[in-house]
Length: 249
Image 1 (tube, helix red, strand yellow):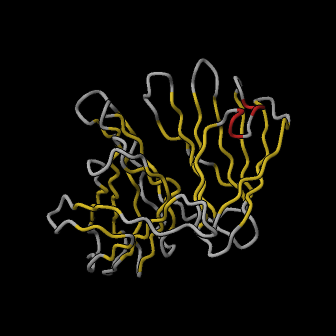
Image 2 (cartoon, one colour):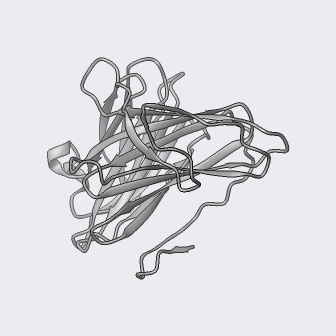
């Protein structure tokens, strides 16, 4: 549990079974009051390096690299880049990379991908500076056939979704919608560019009228050969948001 000193709490994930060569971060939020800090840990017994690649949410045939201003709480020189390569990270060492939200008032969204030569994993903490609320986005490395996200759109609460692909091909992700009794109440399909990202709220203007005012689940089906990542964000009217984990199926 992380408390940032002003009664804003968020959970910190525990890293286990880190044997995949990296993974993806389904949501990258930068600017507009947001700051994101990547926490990378070498859980292996040998030194390793990692590469972080950032992608914009783009309407082009492919998602384009997103250049971010990066600062480093551990003292490295600041830089601006769309791909960051770290020096060798010793076994047991951790490394922090921060995308500074103070540079622009424009809110940018996208996704990130981590590749590594060893057993490096981690997560991102996003902080909204106006109210200091924070939320954690874990690294997705499960590569499941589908992901189930529980939503709650009652009492003024809004559910947001971030969906990303770590494939070099364009794709469409089928979505199956159930209410809280398990009854199927709709379907949809989300187009993703190569290395693409989509973010939206569950409301009629974004093609999800069946979810208005109810609780239920969304199942995102991974297209054959296309790894995807899914993340939910729960935001009550006071904007004390938190992340909703996707359940691998």
